[in-house]
Picture 1 (cartoon, rainbow, N blue to C red):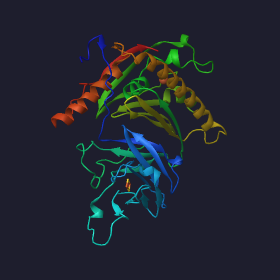
Picture 2 (cartoon, protein in one colour; picture 1 turned 135 degrees about the horizontal axis):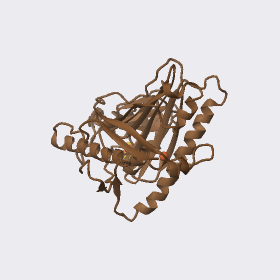
Picture 3 (cartoon, rainbow, N blue to C red; picture 1 turned 180 degrees about the vertical axis):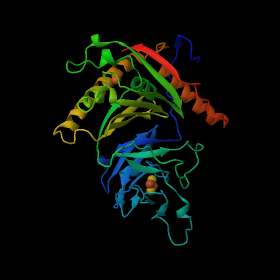
Picture 4 (cartoon, helix red, strand yellow; picture 1 turned 90 degrees about the vertical axis):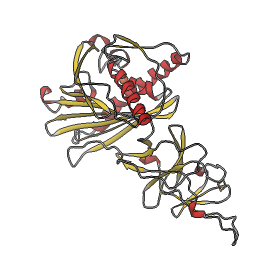
Amino acid sequence: MSEDSPLVEQTPDSLMLFGFWYRALPSDVVKRGELLSAMLLEQPLVVGRDQQGRAFALRDACPHRGMPLSCGHFDAGEIECSYHGWRFEAHTGQCTAVPSLVKDQTIKVDRIYAGSYPCEERDDFIWVFVPDPGPAGAGFTKAAPAPVPAPEIPKFSENYKLAYLTADLPCSVDHGIIGLMDPAHGPFVHQAWWWRSRHSIHEKQKNFEPIPYGFRMSAHTPSSNSAPYKLLRLYAKADSITTTIDFVLPNMRSEIIRAGKYWFSSLTTVTPITRNRCRIDVVAAWNLFRWMPFGAELLKFVFAKFVEQDRRTMELQWEGLKHNPHLMLIDDADRPAKWYFGLKSAYLEMKKSGGEFRHPMSGPVTLRWRS
Ligand code: FES
Ligand SMILES: [Fe+2]
């Protein structure tokens, strides 16, 4: 795919990227002592929380005969399968008991593992590291630790608030992500009388630069149509406000807005559930509105509207995509989408060849579009 071609046909391939942290479930839905099932990259998980509050995630299939472990019981740090009562340590997945064994049956119980995943809690979500799948048919062994800690939202003061929003999208992760990065749909999808009309469309010019595994929209005064910006203008002079927006593989868009001592920071992810289903999670942290009675609710309301407009749009788009139409990505508005596909293939290529990561951008680029 050439970066300079004015028109590129591109059918997203919905390959999912292994070897990264993904958001599995919001923290507040996972209660101590309960087991929940979840799905990430077509892998069924059982997620829970021990009596100390530490979260864990295992493959949701008993290594004996495949019964979902989420149907079992959880007590004293162990999961007991509901079929034959095998027990597994919740964090490591190591088997601790096989009740059918009699004294002289010497199978090495502690060598049996239910697959376990590195699991960390950050900013109101339980994150799970999804490693490359092992060879088909091989049983699980002790899980390797994740190579890096789970992502975290940058924060710029000790006191702040945090809130999240989540929505299921009935489309592949690729369409979810390029929809998230798409600068041109705003005037048509995100209209509201209190927000903007399609007539507010105007020309924009933004600078982008490559960053490891991603790209950055360089620090600039935010678009007059951006939600946090409209609210931030209540606090600071318009030209003292700057924002930086990053996209980083596999699925993360982070936005940092700063205005003097006030800041707003968000990390949005689009997580592949299956090939045709993904979920968008927006988590925001801020130190604004602490004096304003409905500040957080107002922000949540604005974001919920946006996310719902995007969700509805992608639901309708999926109707059209079902029949596998030819698609095109145009310059400059779809350039971020092209970079996303370029980053993704560079990552897959690096894994296949064991070589370097070949970034699709060779240096800073200025893009222009109307929105
Ligand atoms: S299937 Fe789980 S103990 Fe047999
Ligand atoms: Fe949108």
